[in-house]
Length: 261
Image 1: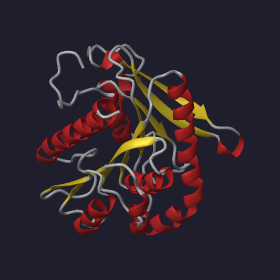
Image 2: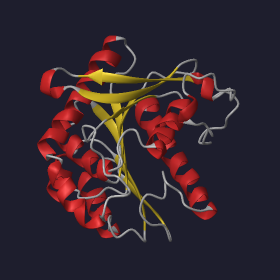
Image 3: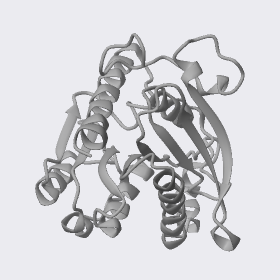
């Protein structure tokens, strides 16, 4: 954004969308909740759209298990939009995200209720909406995709099915339950960001994905960091690494969607 050096994270809050935020950078983004798709494919989503500094690129952001309305996810998406992007965040859980107060033993039961094919269809619906809206308006030739945790794992599934048709670059933050068989089907570069203290996203798995996918893919590991540090930093030290992770992601999107598009 204006007055910000390349790679610097803009401190905005999605809470202020459309309410007349005083921060100049935040005034460059409009946010609106959408209903996309028809019939059984109808889902809710949130679109953060850059206004004055729109760079013409669309990004699909897949949330973690806490869903598209979670403040950490929306703030992250908003910060990406502050740098000129049009960011769509779909409701992957049809109004039933994991709630922090639920007993942990119930997690697997809850996850099993989120049918993988239904989730895949909803992501496909979101992708089609972006293609129809953005390409028709001449905004974006191809799209980028970002995912955290659960969403980071789904990034791999999406890219394997997409075969480079819609998405030209991707960032997967500490993806979970990733399918190794999908790696060989991916045609675009992926940036993997995780911590070396994250049991849910083993470093060895990421290294294998990096080698199999190729195409300039990259793995960046933050020492001493656990799960979700990049979008849910819990300390001053984690926040500094979150800033660096954001910069890596932003530069990756810039190169993949703006420079090499």
